[in-house]
Length: 385
Figure (cartoon, rainbow, N blue to C red):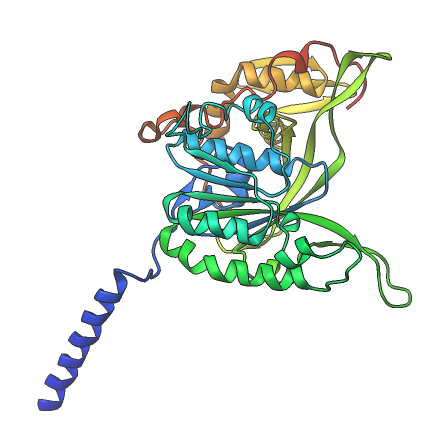
């Protein structure tokens, strides 16, 4: 009997200490998500951007990595959340910010002192650490654009001819190790933009292959690794008048994206992600893909036959079909819902909620932004898709 009382006392002491420690250190809990503003990314990630995770987003050049990251930043701001964007490449400019609708959210000490989108153009790890040490715990999302553009102090002060093998990989490992535990505790998500580069085989007979830059640390620390490449015939084009006359010019890219590593949803399931240059991620093209796979849109040459509920249409060209989807978005979303919803895996996944949540302000337009409106569709598309 005495032994039983002693065990009970020990358990009480144990759980008392656990309760005290739980105030400081996070234990397992239900995953919380923030909408990314893209139905494709939300499906890939299990419902949105999980809180307190590191996401590595690697892609080829020209795919629209920064545009995608800025689109997510805007979705966060629309939901009343704060974003810290560290632009190591120095590529984000005022025209891009204005074109993507971020101008109203951009912090400015004189004109918008409470702006939730905080942008700093920095150069070295030390610069980033000075900003992160003060601000990381006070924001909801950190974007690093990009990991491969960050300089170490040694590289900054050395000659371009000096060989410093592996220094970026070693420093980036320490950099992520320093902030990851705190990001988990504070529920701050990170999106780290990275590049896919071609490596040359070092042994006889070995072919070239694509790999993520930055060493192995960048592969182990993130909870989610997204990989994106341009799809086959992945250029979105329209006819415009140029100095050489009327010709087709690209206005966006269709990319294949999948998760190489994912702790919140099944990995290695590719989806199409359409990015409109200077505007953001298009959900209309995602609806188009869903309707075509479901059989409601059927292609015949350059024409598309649409059959939704009792409505039928015959439209020439993919761009014009997307314009029609944009004009009938409420009906399209209702139709998709009635057919089981937009899912990563039709038989097992939960559908993505495409409707308004009045508790987060402007969320009604998270999936309804007209990314492809206006001049994108001023001309007919006569060639085959």
